[in-house]
Length: 206
Image 1 (spheres, helix red, strand yellow):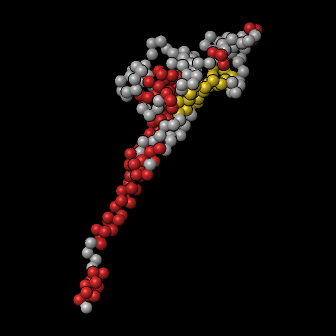
Image 2 (cartoon, helix red, strand yellow):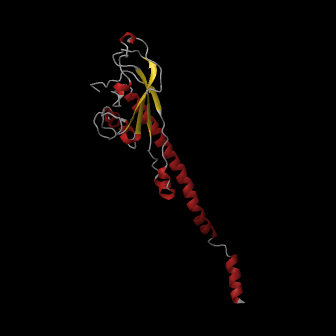
Image 3 (cartoon, helix red, strand yellow):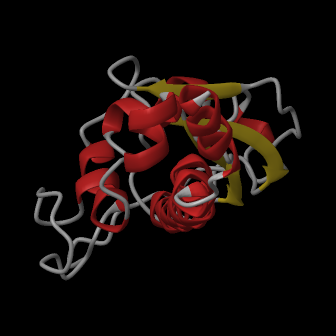
């Protein structure tokens, strides 16, 4: 009889219920807050990657060609000397691609590391992509030059080309969700940046 009363009293006792509810819901609430924070951090990394690529594309558009077979693919003079001075053809199928280390020139180092050759924020007077986003290395970049139909045969600095710069195999850095759910292996999209080149010749004083 006494035991039965104790059991009934135990089931009707509500003390400590709030603590149990808090212990059950706290991990869920914490995960939700962490998701919001990590999402904002991921968007920041995405934006940083895009801005670094835009800067790198602009820098590459006025720098020495980044592909080793550039002169063979895009000759300055026409095969027929009588055609010199005429417009170059618009044929996007004619292209030259650099994906480190394949077909890439040492000029790629300057685009990535800047003029000082070191990936360190705030120290380079002429920074590279890595100075703006440390996640991006030479191995993560692909550069493609294509005919745009601009310029003319015999132009001193060659035809005006279209250049595409894109990133690959760069993952988000998510400390919390990465540790809990393994989401730090999510790859940042390629974000190709296409730009029309100018004189592909690096400034000697830059």
